[in-house]
Amino acid sequence: MPIFLAQLVITLQSFGAPEAVVPLLAPLKHVQGIETDGKRLWVSSVDKVANTGHIHIFEIATGKMLKTVQVSKGEVYHPGGMSIDGKSLWVPVAEYKRVGRSVIEERDKETLELRSWFAVNDHVGCVAAGEGEVYGGNWDALKIYTWNTKGGLIEERVNPQKTHYQDMKLRGGKLVASGVVDKDSGTIDWLSVATLQLEKRVTAGKTDRNSRYTNEGMTVYGDRLYLLPEDGPSRLFVFRMDTPGRP
Image (cartoon, rainbow, N blue to C red):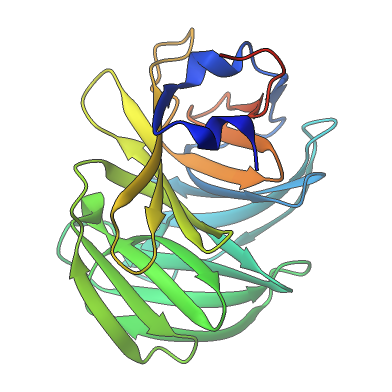
């Protein structure tokens, strides 16, 4: 267990400087969610002028874009926070409004081809998948849904946390969710799947470009925390969470 899990609330700064800051070498408009296997980075983005949504795959070592596909269809063009489960990439694609429809897509993580989908009568902004279930947060994550992988609703709950989650993952039996609190700060939260109660929290401020670190994309892989807060030119920030000597 990483050292930071022994404490309930710490700051992002306590991890020290980012282990890496990787410029993404593609003209992304408005970044959304991210996922990683440690070598590649999956990114969802929105072009608000063209009304289109996209998923991209980047090589982390170089920042080079390897693949991109469009995921929008008509008014449903806003992809959000994504989640990899096995060979599948789960991504919500919604109408760009608070009260709207969404499609939860399962895509092949390598080819990005659509495998299956189900519809939700709400704007779903982020999903986390694993153990045969898909969790999703609506606009500002005021509600947290649980579905089976066929789209059957298992549970709909009010989110007891105040953070407006933008990206969400299932890690070690916990929901790890990140988002914004106010105009200057945000958090990355470890939540109980059963109760949605806070178990651990990392508070975060802003980048040197005045963007909140938790504005958009977040994922955790091993002992690394990945954040993609900035629209183009976008930079990926990688933090090592078990930094030796961190108090």
